[in-house]
Length: 601
Image 1: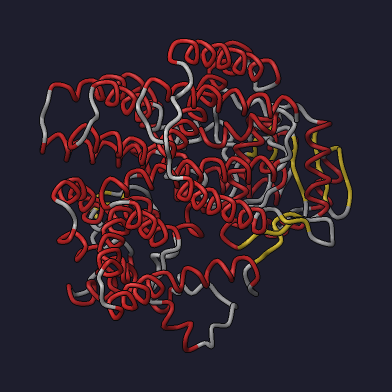
Image 2 (image 1 turned 180 degrees about the horizontal axis):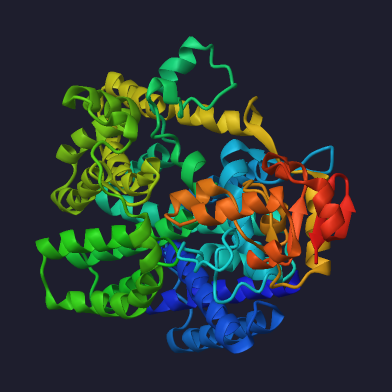
């Protein structure tokens, strides 16, 4: 655990030291410091582990901590500590409190131990979490360098994994998986809060910014109408009712807790955006553009959709203010970012689906009126108030917000992955600007002298987030929200695999998302959950047929042909109808306990 703390402290020390070269307010320094520290520490430790030490362990982590600490001391010596300035203590306290609530909610819904010795999670973490745990543990325990998909052994990992790698450093340094995931989530969420506040404040002022943050992170939709008819019973997620056509669900629930990469991507993008704003409309110059370029250049392997968002906003602002100084952004962004895009290119091409009108498949063939109603119910009050708020915003804010409208158009006309819903990652950037502008309008109403307008402002804000607040309550305390992710036997077999098999070992398993060998032991498997493989645009059908044939007619020759050394037969493999007697007679049983068996040759 000490190594994990030293590593994290060195990353943050460097990140904050790097901010000393710039004139930043307290919230901006927190945002840039955390984002820069995680990005720099993750990248440096990745490169050292990959090319110098051959694996992620104490050596590259301590080397990373030493290098970053020396760099931080040099920066402190050159620029000195920031001069004492007055800062908004109340705002920082509000943002810190919000980050603490996020941490507590994460802790409640992530791998919570149950009475049977297993662990449970809220449904969205139950489904998405094991993929990220598999990435974390594959780096920490599975010698996954160069990076491969743990759930598709041999396939190059084109998915943005930097957030999971940084978390893996904490696990490799002695932290528990649950603690490392929740801590890193909350830390980066604080950076996101501060970065978004800094951006929103530029567009509409302090109070509008705080309102906008509330509208964005606690966003709701027309689900509140259904909740009213159901007596507000906490038995479902009212922001996600597919039968009622509600799919633009609460973003904290749908994205920022389960899909960890978007946290780092969004935090980095918000920092870049407020640096862009300063260059186009404010005090920023070449130094700020260079900082934005470095952050943007490090971001593709953190979150590809956020890197795309940065590029689109840059294009819009460049069209408005074409200047040679933009090269200070473009050059570092290209030098650092293009190699990552090259690495990811093959997977991006296979997963791209082209033109697709209407975001979701269920919207195909709908009339313009039906489509408008769909978005009014899903975008809800933030959509309407954001559109109106644009007219009340100051001229600079209007110009800056315009490129974000492109995300709504793109999200409804192009599909970037096989899964249609996944375009919510693009649409969320449109919603970011809409929430900010909606905050501007509500702030204007609240600032009016008439009590009726103040009451209207309060009502609109509450109605906009009502179903989102119910989602949070359902996540923490509701029924039908929490499912067992792992049993006690899952943890037991994972410990056996870590202790008794090579870090490079490959297993054959069923395609369950909660497979313990991959997600808890960090070992690669021949083929994991097909839902992930399909949504990532990976080819797996031939391998699926071979795995199914293996379980029906197991043999050492077939196991070796799959490139594996071990085969798991557990309750999850029952769907493969394994020939148990053939396993016992043809292969060696390396492990058996509680209905779980591992076979080898």
